[in-house]
Image 1 (cartoon, rainbow, N blue to C red):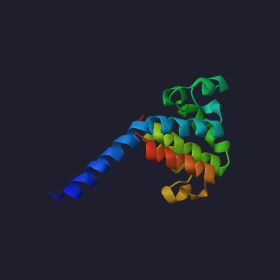
Image 2: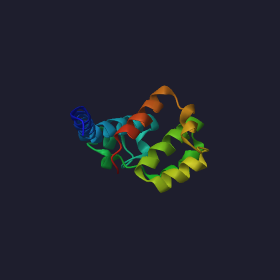
Image 3: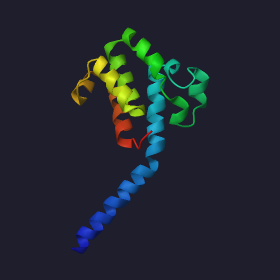
Image 4: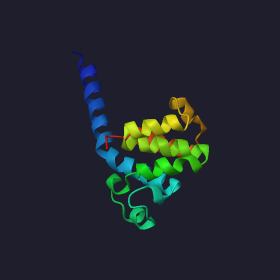
Length: 130
């Protein structure tokens, strides 16, 4: 193997390792911002205090049962964003919600405003599993 190719491979591995060592915190930061936008009532224990005191994603799990009941009363952008967030937590429930709100593919996220797009993009880049 060419030494330049070897070094490029090592450099890429190092970049990946560095990224994914920071990914859980970056994911949580974006997740928490998403919860702030949606409102804490649908996450964790449903209180602002829970949001304020959250230290990781587990503190802000979506309340899928409540979300299923209330998602229909939201604007289309709010519904799409919330369903996309739920899909990170549970792909089956999130996928069903995405379908319910009319999302058939990633292009359907194009209706989100810039802030929500950035949150979803950050979640995708830093997702390491729930």
